[in-house]
Amino acid sequence: MSEGWGGEGWVGADSAHMSPAQFREHGRAVVDWIADYLERVEDLPVLSRARPGELRERLPAGPPEQGEPFAAMLRDVDELILPGLTHWQSPNFFGYFPANASGPAVLGELLSAGLGVQGMLWSTSPACTELETHVLDWLADLLDLPAAFRSTGAGGGVLQDTASSATLVALLAARERATAGAGNTTGLAATARLTVYSSSQAHSSVEKAVRIAGVGSANLRLIDVDDDLSIRPESLAALLTADSAAGAVPVMVVATVGTTSTTAVDPVRAIGELCRRYGVWLHVDAALAGTAALCPELRWLHDGVELADSYCVNPHKWMLTNFDCDAFYVADRAPLLAALSILPEYLRNAASASGAVIDYRDWQIPLGRRFRALKLWFVIRHYGAAGLRAHVREHVALAGEVADWVDAHPALERLAPVPLQLVVFAHVDGDVATQALLDAANDTGEVFLTHTRVRGRLAIRFSIGATLTRQRHVRAALALLDRILGPSATSPYPVGAMP
Image (tube, helix red, strand yellow):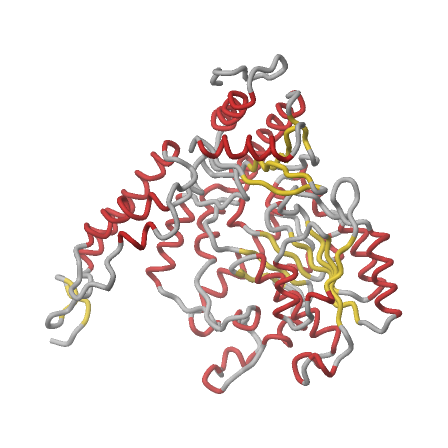
């Protein structure tokens, strides 16, 4: 008998492959473990207490010579891995940004792993490509994005891993358009000096992209911001004018819809009009905040997006889809394909040659690509538009409650507007007191908060967005902060009180 999958498992002498029966048994154990974890994650210390090197000290020095029982691996996850985790799925995780997982997303990821699809070309798995194209058109509809971003026109969408990759890919396309391909064919040394523009509040991925793309950090211009920490269009206009007069070629402006530190929203329409006037590529980074546009009442965030050349949003942040999943759109795919398409003989095929299909390998940095669309498809179908909107609205309302609490507390001061799900505040007594409050809260293990700096001041970020977070978790966190701060006549959560 030839080797292959058989009724009793892998047929072949001394095979170590896991049989279908074993896979079913162990797979059920893993699904049960995940379900149990999600039921108890609320009670685990949110922030890991592990010290550097602690896990490695407990692991064997070398790999096993013989295979080990699966039950032993799962036991070690409990005993070795869990103590070294910060629990991003905890409903008491209020740090950084949401990094959502949900049941349908996890199951979609599992199915993607089981299929093991390599979706670099349409021909390598047509369903992988066509589902991605279709789901991204769905998402464009859900977010009410401009028609130019649909696959039915000159543009379209693709799933990247993160917004960092989206920014880099956008810059490469922008460079291609600005240099007419010279940056690719003869190198940047043969072109004029290129410049890129972003707010001082923009994500660090912008600077990383200019380094990788060969533009250089010295040619990244940071634009002045106003009292709401949003780009001042007049400052951008002055920089574009000065650089053009000096012989530079402005290549791309990054407008951020919801900055990482404070969720500041840049004035996209005014920026877009300047980009049109100067012939500069506009990339809109809406990694977190773009999800809010699921709700019609929050679509003011996207005012002017029709002027953008590219746009990205991360369903893996606030749209219940586990990491990694970034939706990247372009209004015109031609510069993107020109920048990234290289066709060796071994990838040539009739479908690609016909021009009737999309090959997503040409829309990203790596050649290979996973079947990310499955999990996003599962999420949208499971929750529906109404369920996704309810998720966003609940968190926006909870952030409003936190903002009201901060505004009412005599020991605290809010340092930024609260357009969505993030509240940024500080202790009125200064940075030392703010740091002490942050440390005391995190040391309890009951919550996890992170910090930023706003106009030089240390600030605490209270970010709401975890899949499991409900009002009771937010109110418990506020009660904890109240206990640390001490008695306050104006606080709605007096010391020792639990909502």
